[in-house]
Length: 132
Image (cartoon, rainbow, N blue to C red):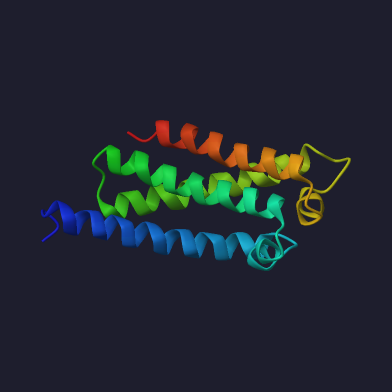
């Protein structure tokens, strides 16, 4: 059944969407703010940081699919990639001791939100490129 390219695409799509939903729930647990409440209020910084995480995970899926990995392998890579993106977020927090990333993003500091977004996007390419 998965030999049909339409069904295979649908399967990858479904797994990717489910993974992104789960990963965003985890991300919500590790941040001080509530992503979707802040986005609803128009907080661009939260939207950029969240969008960067979504793009990052989807990009890792893309690399895994491109390398003809199975759906399970793509999911494993996305989990690994998401963990690395979270680690990067905490490193970013550690490397900026003069202010708290979460607080600045919650206050809609767009410079901090933009850097957070590009960290997630950039590192997703690093993780994706390492997929063999």
